[in-house]
Length: 140
Length: 107
Image (cartoon, rainbow over all chains, first blue to last red; front, side, top):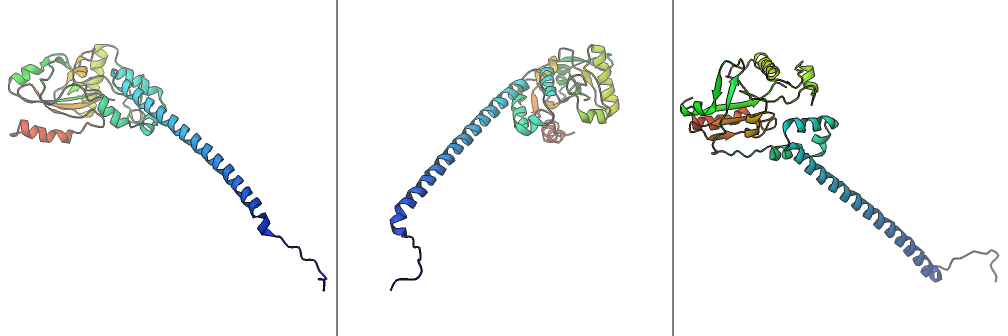
């Protein structure tokens, strides 16, 4: 006896290869897109690291310049940027380490007192077997 | 104290904190101007230790890599007994104490 109704059926078994191919295609498409995004990200990071390294080198070099040259350079930079972007303190400690070491003979100097009435010579103070503390600084 | 070239003169690298504290000086252009600012520094900060003025070519600052501030201890033989790290980050007077105790334990 024939069915009074028609039930549409889908024979999946014969369509499996087609579906698999479609899924693989979209998979390949997604993989290709993901790979290119990864490459772009790596390239961007590489460029940023390179720029950061160049920036560190430039900052270190300028730190080794005479104080006024360094100060004029810093005045042109926007506020806290060099302190936030670069390892400023580490670079500063290295750049301004100086060539004098503990145990080295102290460079002699003869400088006037502020009222210019007397001259103070370091070697004359130490000749009196007196240790001397030197505190260097300015007002600003 | 060895007064050396200003760290943040108003015409070079002005700091907001200095404006707030009303410590605003342009770079001294002559020995006299430098002596004037140094005098203001000593008076206003109440510095009581003897103070000398680095010469205008900054030769002492340069020999000691002292800018913007730094501390040294020279022993009785005229050798460097203590050298602080460069200021402002390394300017720590308390670090001087141990070196002073070695060089001048009686004080």
